[in-house]
Length: 166
Image 1 (tube, helix red, strand yellow):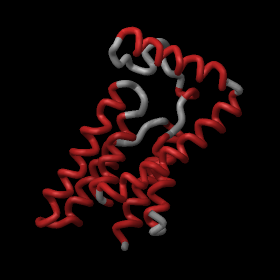
Image 2: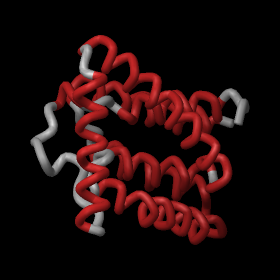
Image 3: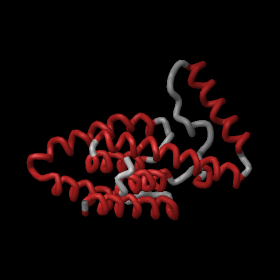
Image 4: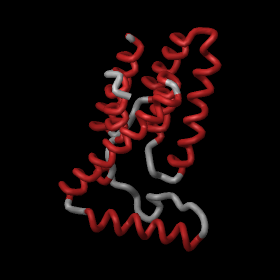
């Protein structure tokens, strides 16, 4: 049980730094990763590493396409290693829901629904016409104000897991 709260603390700290500075410190993620590996013990270490590697490999293309930050991918890897793939998958679904809510509120506040969806559909047309995946923010340099801190949504999903709602 204490390891759940420790992971929630890591996710919360990542969320705070992502909200204020749009960065998730690698030192915290590495510390959380190695702490989780120590808690897994010698017999659980291989499974722990496999979980982290599988999620990192699955989410790496999403980062390469510019759809999420590298810190979010590394945080997801740490979370999956700690909680297991099934729990992480459920957590990710809820985190995507929370992230969507955050994005909708952000677009409402900035009054840029039309511009953001226009950009998305232009990107989608470009991918289809070129028959290859094009990085999402390739056409314009993303402003920090045009993105959401997804680690906050991941933290909300982790909170549901800690409360044993997932």
